[in-house]
Length: 143
Image 1 (cartoon, one colour):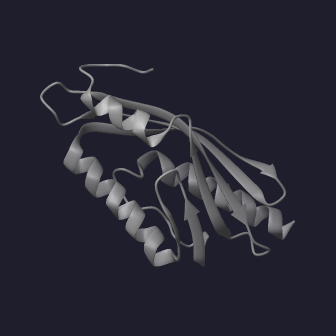
Image 2: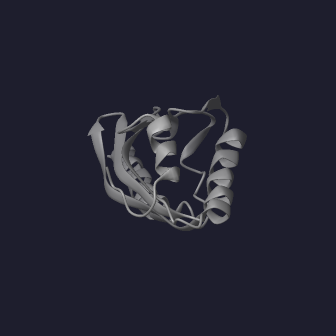
């Protein structure tokens, strides 16, 4: 039962941290030192690099967006050693034509025997180039 309690705590931490990841730092105590991260544009290992990617997200959010949101839809234990989070990123770019960015995705978190996350894989509903094209469209476009 102790192991499941730890998994539940990881889920609660993710539910708390993810909605504000563009505004403030996350908790790193639920991740291993050698955490592996991969999304459609990044791939690396190590908690220092993991911290850097979240700092970079916050920095670019403030620099390039008038507003940006990470809408967390659900966080759940999908198998014994996997937690899944579903989400949407949406925002308004800091450009004169106020282009909107919008994409959905999900995060897969693999847990080790100590209920710590050792692998975080993000999957997006569109290719990075398609997301980048949204920067050049005028106004709201959620397609």
